[in-house]
Image (tube, rainbow, N blue to C red):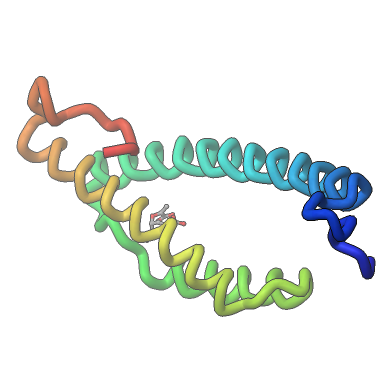
Length: 122
Ligand SMILES: C=C(O[C@@H]1C=C(C(=O)O)C=C[C@H]1O)C(=O)O
């Protein structure tokens, strides 16, 4: 694509249409990412309760190392920067561990009426 505007300050309608088409797909992908993350957190919340119930530690560095190695390979095969994939996974896992610490804490101290819910957002 060589022309980005009509020369009169207006964007070429074909460019506008292409941008809209791509943004529609981006919006769909973002929605899928949100839904997949929500499902992942549903699973990790259950893991958190299982760990708290059986007095297991919130973090499992061996499992994390396996996941990172696996994800880096998947990223490489998908032409995604493996360093980015690793950073993203570490970011998500850090949040999960925070939830698990909270669940374990609540199991020991008893969940209070205001601070004892297990909603992942806080
Ligand atoms: C979910 C778990 O707890 C933690 C969070 C992980 C994750 O989000 O994938 C992985 C390992 C643990 O540090 C688990 O142990 O499986």
